[in-house]
Image (cartoon, rainbow, N blue to C red):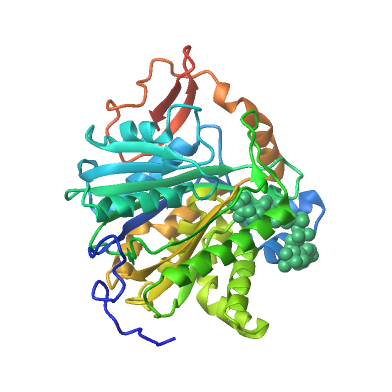
Length: 424
Ligand code: CAA
């Protein structure tokens, strides 16, 4: 491999097959519920050593949603922060895709609620994508193609990944829960990360590693098999990406889908093996190339569709300045399964831009839940979508609610079983 790290953004040799425009992530922001559980507390309650969750899985805290927080409210808050970070108005959005695997309705998409709550223009393509944790990436890559094809006509795309990850209390999956949303503004001449349109390595196969039947709130998973499926998908997607990539410039960092930190570590080890590295070299490489991306996810847990992008946010938050102009890798995995490996270049403006994401304050403005309170919340999960609205007369989501500086709350359902959102 040549070490071509001096090339400048946009003038690099790999514009991709679809476009020579500079396209990528212009701004990013996230939202989490206002409560979290310490994994050490959960370990004590489940009678396992805290080291199993903290070192063994690589998770320190997991976000827990209250009944008035759902994928719509989290998406809206993340999107609102993203528009603010980008200094853009809703009128500039021509495409809005929400990736989620915990949608609130079998028909009406989260994106429609978001459209109303943000006040997006009516001339805006709005839809929701589902493919387990891959749904957000499907949206992102669609948006890149939309821009590359010239359909944007000066507008931007808003991609929001939003989920509440739930496994049954007391199961092996319980410490790998979480909740949150990541929103990204995708545009030409991006200030955070320039992507390589048309150059992605895909891998798909039909496997039953993780699923959630229509009648269930909690996911079902074949845990160890899901780890194997993830690693097989990584190997397939990475090989395909290597075949397609026109540049031999190395990836100095890689962000992986993070169901829990240890999974990203296993993924990087597998990739290093594929590159012919020793285990010792792989461990050193992990510390430099992956660990910074796991710091924020370790405080939030699995947020399914948004997990990869929370890792990207974490990496840029900690290292954007030193990564300026450098090429990084991204790996997205969705059970079922679909995976994609792709790359991007950190822009010189990334450090200034990520400083607007409010990372520390978002995490600091949360309170710690005791385990009995968490368990009580989980017991009531099943009924939360049937809760009658406390304010049936409140305006339904829609143009009536202009974008405001406060996050909306899910306020139950009205007498026609429509979800009601109110501004706090
Ligand atoms: N101190 C330190 N480490 C300890 C320990 C201790 N006292 N006790 C155990 N460990 C280590 C184990 O050695 C193991 O590490 P390695 O994997 O490196 O060997 C780690 O802790 C976990 O231990 P187990 O494998 O015994 O854990 P488990 O069987 O109880 O559950 C799990 C692990 C299968 C990941 C489970 O949490 C689960 O099912 N999670 C949900 C599924 C999931 O996230 N799958 C990931 C791939 S699928 C995907 O990515 C899509 C998605 O988002 C869901």
